Length: 138
Image 1: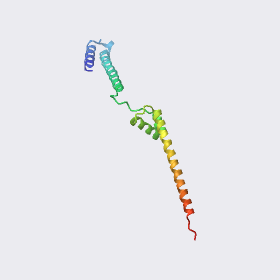
Image 2: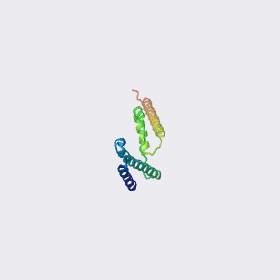
Image 3: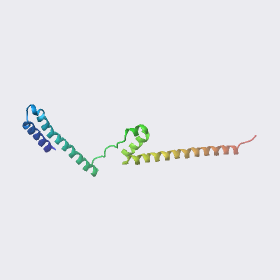
Image 4: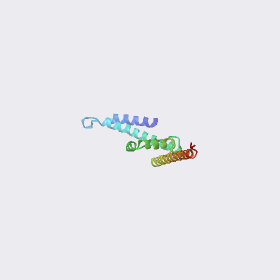
């Protein structure tokens, strides 16, 4: 990186000094020097992205946060938050998989609540029947 920036600085200085000057060449020194520096910036960014991609494949750099569209957040904020949490904490890679898992979990919880409600009704009916059976008539 240091060598790239040294070379880019030297190229920018050289282009600044040797750029054509005069009324017909207004802005030429700035343009040529700027092009040398912008090439260094682009090269540096490409090098960082390549290095990060290689480290990510080795598992040394964490994956970026999942991107979810704003419309989804506005339409279903609770479901989206749960799916986003699954993607972050459980390592689910796809938004579709995370949403499906959230929906399955919600279905299971609803079925469990219904089962508990039915069990409570049955228990109350048994208690009523037992009380009717053992009433003492005077």
